[in-house]
Image 1 (tube, rainbow, N blue to C red):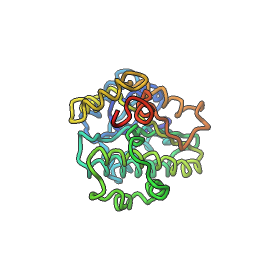
Image 2: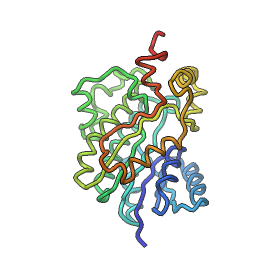
Image 3: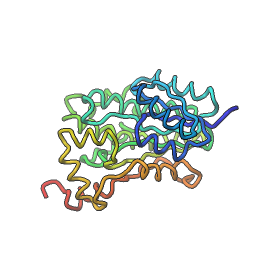
Length: 277
């Protein structure tokens, strides 16, 4: 029997929270490069009554993305996308961050956009980090949004000599994610579908714990201590937003980024987190 299909990339806490909130009754194809993680999350969800199939998927590889899409199409129309895959500044070198978080997300949105069913919707997970760097020029933003995916990493602003460190690479990748969602929302709209972005702040996940224990751990702990919310967020709070964006209640929302960081960005620009204070 054919089912609506939900593609979920990244076998992490945010992806799982969104899939559990929005994926019941659907065929969920869960893809991750680490098959052990993927199978673990798939089993947790299967034991809770969800229909989940784990597949190995490398976000930095177009053929791997296309294979995941093809697997989903075996069960029905691709109706939903949840992209939570990625690597953090403490987990990977500059080249890997740009290839996975920036290039890979661009390819995923492009390839899913070719097949997304009418009435379908997607969310991709970026980061507050995209809001923590100097504004780019309008032309640079346009380049990040519209450059063919296979040419993205050749842009001058993304060449190794112009990337300071892994954090800068991550910020550029997340800025690109947001611009790419705007660009792709036009193409998805031609198929009667929507795509949006969620930019989380510090969310308690294994990835965040790596950051807390990494070289910028004190910086991150200070960030959530001095943001208006006074705490980190949870994966389920990101699922609250995704539930709106993936449902008919969000039918008028597409091409948008929802910043959900407990006010940390506001504090960074206008409060106690301002640089130098």
